[in-house]
Image 1 (cartoon, rainbow, N blue to C red):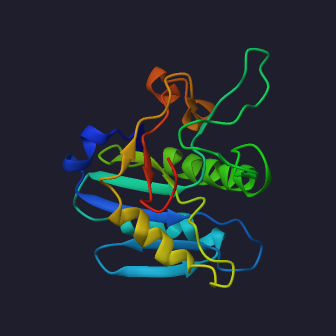
Image 2: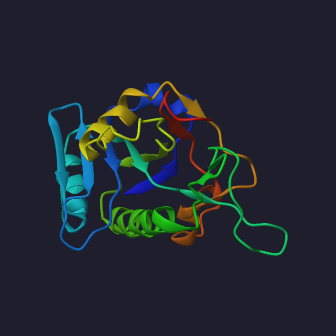
Image 3: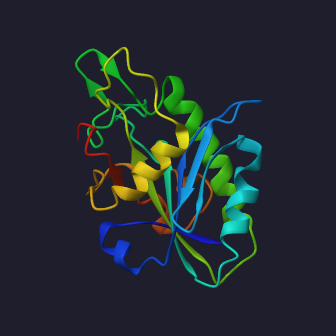
Length: 196
């Protein structure tokens, strides 16, 4: 399938949507998936590609894919990782940098999934890729964590809340393809609860 970085202007053209709250666990169902045609579920990472492939069998050819994981990276002038300003990866003392902790593990998980999608033989389908960002949700400390599939649904519902990445961010698809378009970072769908 052809994967291109989704932009705000593409959203109205997309016929089908698949949203993922990315997880990366050996045995727990940490990947929340949602699509408006009727699926809302937590699944194990190893089943994620098959779930997407089954979903993509629909007749329609323009698919919007939202993944809650860093889908671009930023390096300083010496080539070292640097925090991104869009989306805001630092809030006071709290950080959610793309290159540390859970950010780096779900980036790897997303890259592995995108490789399978990229290598899947279906030349008719175009996948518009969007980064989802739900960090710094402002939950009270005593409130339980949200369900992964609820976060995936929230990303789908927030498609109107789109920010454009900085022009010097590099899309992770550039690690899979030499296509010049692969270097472009996808637009970022942010929850209205997140801080931009």
